[in-house]
Structure formats: C-alpha cells, structure tokens
Length: 103
Image 1 (cartoon, helix red, strand yellow):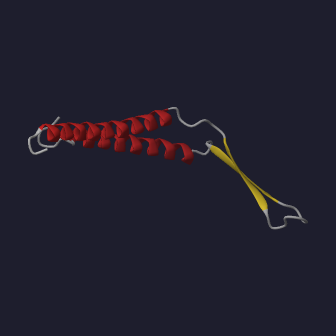
Image 2 (image 1 turned 180 degrees about the vertical axis):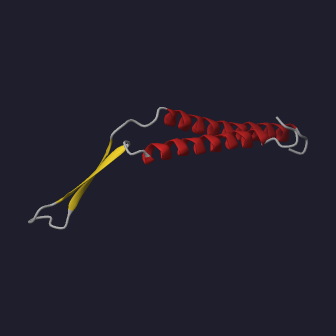
Image 3 (image 1 turned 180 degrees about the horizontal axis):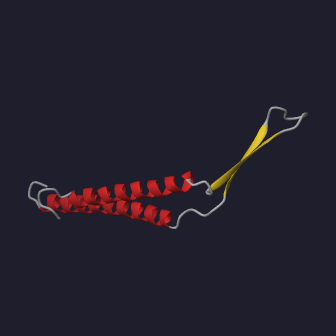
C-alpha cells in the first residue's frame, strides 16, 4: 500500500472501471447506431375496437457484440476490487487502533 495515500489502489481500480464503462458505452453506441442492429414495425389497428391505437414492435436482428459482456465484466470486477481495497485498509486501520494503547 502507498504510505501517503492508502486508498491509491482503490482509486486506480475505480479509474480503470470508468475506462471499461466508457469502452462498453462506445461498443454499445456503435451497435445500436448500425442499420442492421434492430428493426422497428408499427401496426395501427383498423377501424373498430382500438381505433387510434397500435402496436410498436422492435426486434433485435443481430446479436450484441461479444466484447460488450467482457467489458461489463471487467467494469464490475474493478469496482469490486476497489471495494476490496477499502475493506482491506479499513481492517488494517482497525487492527492498528485495537493494538494501540489509546485504542
């Protein structure tokens, strides 16, 4: 651990998680902006019951990019690792307090 900032590892993991989130967002945006990612159909009800109503149907026409779940996995992994750093530092701090004469 860094003596000057015991939470440095936590912040490093958090920063890495933010990077993975941004990468996942770019992959997702590229996917949904593609013309062949999904199709949209609108069916308006004919005269009679339900006039003025309709059904909007959105279908996914191709699978999401394989990289997307990998990036989400890395995102959550790094957030969990950042939390581990906090718990580790807090545990070390509590042990030092318990051993000190004033604690």
